[in-house]
Length: 401
Ligand SMILES: Cc1cc2nc3c(=O)[nH]c(=O)nc-3n(C[C@H](O)[C@H](O)[C@H](O)COP(=O)(O)OP(=O)(O)OC[C@H]3O[C@@H](n4cnc5c(N)ncnc54)[C@H](O)[C@@H]3O)c2cc1C
Image (cartoon, rainbow, N blue to C red; front, side):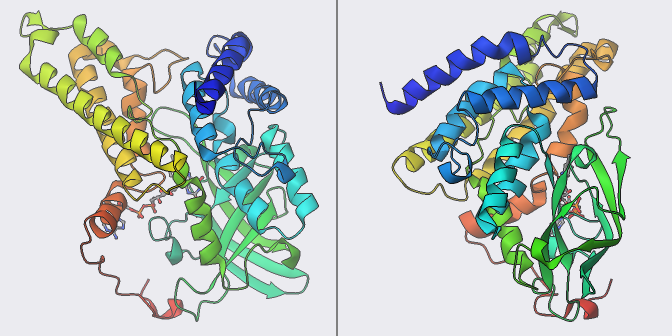
């Protein structure tokens, strides 16, 4: 048995032992405040059990194990539906950035441990109305003056900003420089005067993304995490931190077995749906896509085990998986007719077709929109020429709005 198999067994046994306390049944009908409180308790238990910060350095409260150990734990954790979603962004990007770039190491360690234990939550304030796929198009201003930097502007789609204690933010510090150059990266207290968080409700009625407004928000220079005007490099480092993030060939939607079970109970043209050619072809297509993605993931994990870095083929995962999930969800709803429109209060994107279908479009945008992933595949896997970039090298304040 390899060391990783031993780790998997240990993780599975621990997860099974705490599932009655924190898993799906324990979360039944909890409102968000209670679910978040349960999530904080779960993170504290996970930290105490040694399954937190798995691949983070020991000096900042991590376990110092490999990214593979983390991927194995996450794969085991996923089916239990533990209340850990509130902390995904926080632990995924902002806190690893602090660990890497904050100069006050003792402070970074304190924040890292508080975040690992679920006591503090960080959000990522990158996207704006004019800066999403093209992050360097952002317009929130950071002006240096008395007492530090003054932030003015608006961020958009900020996940869990309503629960966040802190955030990391990129803002434009010099509009006379080309767009990638005049940006600076800071951290800030989300309770600073002048910060306003407004909810955005998504199609399924959930609220986990927000607009965040900045009105003369003062940020001391000691909270700067990049050189002045050198924030784009740190922003890129933030986005690269999770390049080892585990994929899910079901696109975080329901498993194929659930589709087959759903179809088994449906009738198409007076015959069992499972005898219908369109349904059979959809099952075969989804199976082939998922098997292909699982094989890519296995290969990436083997490369990592051998000390190599997985290549850009990781961009295929989300693109193929979420599109496949969306198509399958749509077909399941078609088969179910009006019964498909109802969903249970406790339904998740992994066990309910309506919930999965309503949520799928966000999966095709968040973490890189489909077309951006297609560009990555075109340029980095197929070696095609770069996308046309007419504003390259042009001072930001001379780019037409
Ligand atoms: C659920 C959810 C959670 C999110 N959480 C966060 C968060 O916590 N923090 C944060 O900072 N951001 C967050 N985002 C924002 C996310 O990063 C952006 O939505 C994403 O980068 C796309 O940017 P945009 O919305 O501005 O769309 P745009 O960039 O305006 O894109 C609109 C459309 O145009 C296409 N397009 C854009 N450029 C090109 C091109 N060069 N070639 C071809 N097609 C192109 C896109 O693919 C897309 O279809 C979240 C988004 C979602 C949906």
